[in-house]
Image 1 (tube, rainbow, N blue to C red):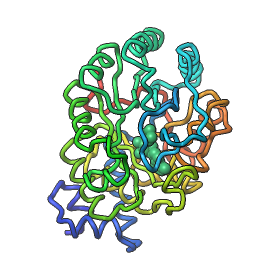
Image 2 (tube, rainbow, N blue to C red):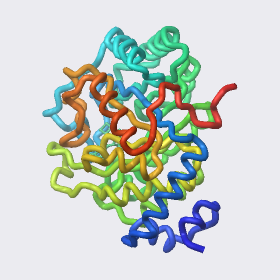
Image 3 (cartoon, rainbow, N blue to C red):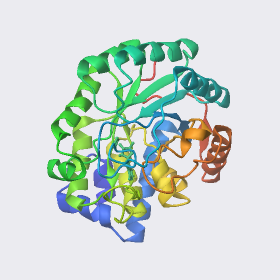
Image 4 (cartoon, rainbow, N blue to C red):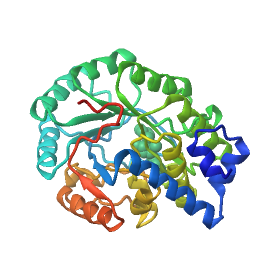
Amino acid sequence: MNLTDKLELNKYLEDGEFEELILSEDAEQNEYLAARARAVRESVYGKEVYLRGLIEFTNYCKNDCLYCGIRRSNKNAQRYRLSEEEILDCCESGYELGFRTFVLQGGEDAYFTDEKLVPLIKEIKRRHPDCALTLSIGEREKESYQRLYDAGADRYLLRHETADKKHYESLHPSEMSFEHRIKCLYDLKEIGYQVGCGMIIGSPGQEVGHLIKDLRFLRELQPEMVGIGPFIPHHDTPFSDRETGSVDITLRLLSIIRLMLPKVLLPATTALGTADGLGREKGILAGANVVMPNLSPTDVRDKYLLYDNKICTGDEAAECIRCMTLRVQKVGYEVVQSRGDHSNFVKN
Ligand code: 5AD
Ligand code: FES
């Protein structure tokens, strides 16, 4: 039996088999992998592609991840924080454009305590009861995650970045703990969030064995969402001279993840679209079913720079949505106006 079929049937794959799928240069095998991923994705979600309106509401960050352009050591980053009113305005204009999920993403900014976030979350949900709210604000204690959930947050994105402890430690300062990050993900699951994890593809020091560990971790955690994208260097970080991660490996991993977790919500990420002008379209054709256009005000767009050459920093949200709708149509799929919940969470 070939490896794609084995994966689809949820059979155990040896490390060597995963390695062969991830690194394969066999065009026929790669096309079959993508075709099965599309078939599985269509059996669960049809041709629908879900939109997430990304609101990058603060780029203050107490962390110092070596790969990230908004790390605290980057003194050249111009810091900003949106006011509650500005965030609510983003949601309002996003709603009119057809977004039914808002993602509040930010650095780990101590300014945004639970006391600040709880009323904000409640207000967004009060104004937009038919929308899902996703948080992506890093590591917090379980009690805090619980309060934000009770306030109305539905989903939480926290990439694990790499499932290998040593590799994790080589990408992060010593005060960041691999164990705490993983614990956060299990806490979020326990509370009842739809949870997203994910890793950077081709981050410095990454070996194929690390990616295999990532896949085994996904199988264990069973996240509702998985965000992956190629590593892209940022000029003001210690990794400024490292190579961009492979788009082809990212695409194969999208397909592998789709086959391992058929119902997963899988974005074609901005990093993928930055590394390759057609990256997001290729991502959708590899099994992705989510796109995340930027809803942040244009005057802060270029300040939320995790890596260089980030796309869409000059475009209005309305333009991004037009552009994404066309790009998605071109490859035979359809952007829809819906919350786009994981199929286990759809309420009837
Ligand atoms: N290249 C690619 N992805 C990056 N991220 C941060 N910095 C980079 C980079 N240089 C990703 C991390 C983080 C997410 C918000 O962006 O995985 O969790
Ligand atoms: Fe804040 Fe990387 S430094 S997320």
